[in-house]
Image (cartoon, rainbow, N blue to C red; front, side):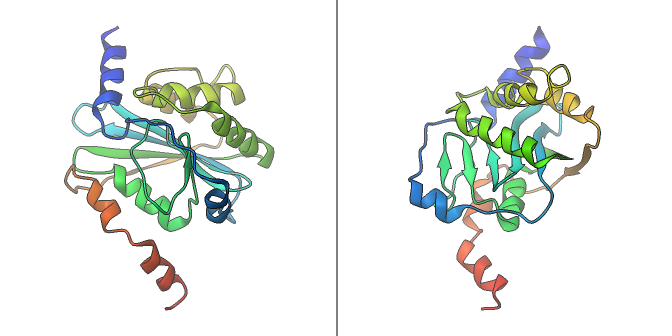
Length: 207
């Protein structure tokens, strides 16, 4: 029982678990839509306390008809990235990079687990994330595992624990993983402050 309490408290304490209802307008979502040319893929992110090993936040990047991040009760916000109830749109490679670096810091690292899936599976997960609704605080792993358990019943179980979800996900055939470690201060807002999408776009076009 104590382990469950620790896991839930960790989700509450980390800045990555502060939820709110958001509904971006249609034109903003359409403009931001991005389809990555890689294979259909699910990427599970688990933010882990470097001192205790406890899971602190869970999110899921989905590469289907477009690439999005289901960031339940997350704090990753930027005016150029429209969001609808925890689904963040426009996940280009630079956005993916800044997202992971936003969460990795001196006290937390990010476990990144990739699973290539059939296109219909990626699209199903995308639709389930879109229809889930706004996620309350401390339910990041619960909401993500609930979605994945519908696609992988009996393997991925609904859970409140980010680490337990990562362990279940790791048992799926074909999962690869890596760990991202950075040693910036816990003030992760600076990562977004330093990220200038206009400058990134100019660099990509040689401007």
